[in-house]
Length: 196
Length: 196
DNA sequence: ACCATTATTGACAATAATGTCGATAAGGTG
DNA sequence: CACCTTATCGACATTATTGTCAATAATGGT
Image (cartoon, rainbow over all chains, first blue to last red; front, side):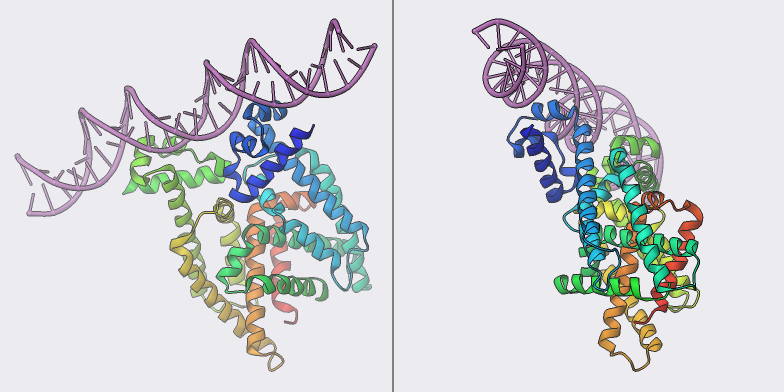
């Protein structure tokens, strides 16, 4: 079962390097050091390979986020969890893969349920934080809705950042390195501070 | 010069329907009611067609946003401009096209300068609004930085929404139609209200 | 009306990508 | 070891996609 992993790694590498269009079976096989027949053997088809890749991505994403959630409560003064979630989504090509998967209209059947659970968990956590911050001024239903919007917002921003962050920040004349970190600070600050 | 437009329309339609992978010359030609030879004639190559498509998108995006900007000041109590910008970016497949273009690593040579100017204009407008909202409490440089972050935020959210909005909102259990509009309200409210 | 340019087409060629098959090798299990 | 399963390969087949070309039709200017 080593070849399968090698092939997936090669595919991921290729995807990061040249984008979805670079995902040619022969090329990937070449990088992995096998023939294209071997790739087909393991994944059934080119489509199967892409599906496996998407699935692997979702698993990694889930694993990373769950690991973060394990380390503490969702909303903290230093926004640690938020940052990590953001980082996991927008860095390491996750967002690009996610975006590509969606643009392709691929199903994420496997991970979907787990993902939904994760979002539910996140929503509950944020809801509690919102309720705590607005004692009595807010109903639980409203808090939940705002929690969901908050998560929605983080997810969209992270995905947008992963897909187009570099390009847009260049257009805006933002210095790449510092701006990235600084924007996240700014973003987290506003996200959690202002009245809900 | 009608066929060229017909073909581009067909390509756009196809892109919206099936994603970037559906962009096959023959298929597009078929929709446009011409032969694939005609497509090649007008665009030189399949790649040329895709490039034209990307360019058309940027132009439309620019036109739409500039039109909005013409109608009034950037920051208003009803967030009209913000909404329209958001809508232009995230609806009508613009974001998908943009994301696809970026995932493909295509250059947006033509529109780039104009886009940069547009962002500059937006940044100045938002800066003024921020300065007005925080009289004296903030330096001009800080206001500009926050303005850029605000725009960055809107752009990323809109792109993320266009790419993955439906999917994520489904995961969160948000009702599609109302949630979309409501989120935008929530988003705009928070974006412009809280202290900068 | 004539000519040059451009548009359009169908048949065909070239290429690229995926998929199939049978042979061979490797690995594990009784 | 004999046997079965799985992995790997190379050669070939199929299909999908793009690209070429020469013929014909349309268009527009003089």
